[in-house]
Length: 271
Image 1 (spheres, rainbow, N blue to C red):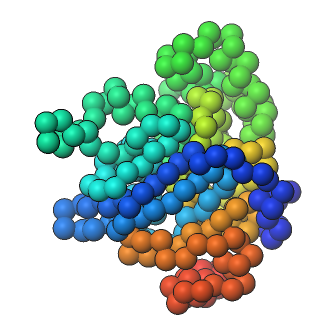
Image 2: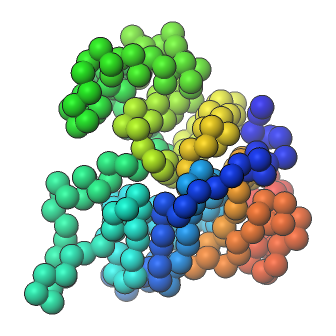
């Protein structure tokens, strides 16, 4: 299957209980109100695509889910943990400690625009370092898991390569394998193909589609509408910090309800 197919694989999936619950979330950067009363429920096994113009709040929402940003109102619960919030102690709002935030983040896998691989480590070591140090998985098992993941992302022959020896698409596939090595319950993707040359985009999106077909819960920020058609259960459009449209792919693309969605699609589908 390639990402350009327009029949969604989501139609054949059965979804489980809510695994990410976002309720009335607000986020400010100074005087900039970047998230405005955002609510969303994502179920186990569901693939949700967030789209919208630059600055609409979609990447900030993803970072709040993964506790890379704190929120200023509302609540986020992911994998049973409260995420992106400040603790209330004696009526005061204080930041979570780095250790507690990292522990809450452990069941979430995050793939960024940039690959963030360790340049001095081989592909195999990039994938095994966190499972060994954080999850205390023995080296033999961590390496066996890493090789299985490299096969899954189509790079079994690259385990001894260094990041500088890989193409951008290959580096991003290694980044996906590295995130999966932590055995996450939810995968978050923040425009994972935006830094890639056009010919490398499909190899990354094909891996993501295969993950969706295998039942991985995914929240994906992307402008790749071919991927949204092929893999999403729902497509959400964000505008000015709010979710302004939400629908299954067929409905979203063929019968958009809001003017924001119609304008967004008219611009993005021209390219």
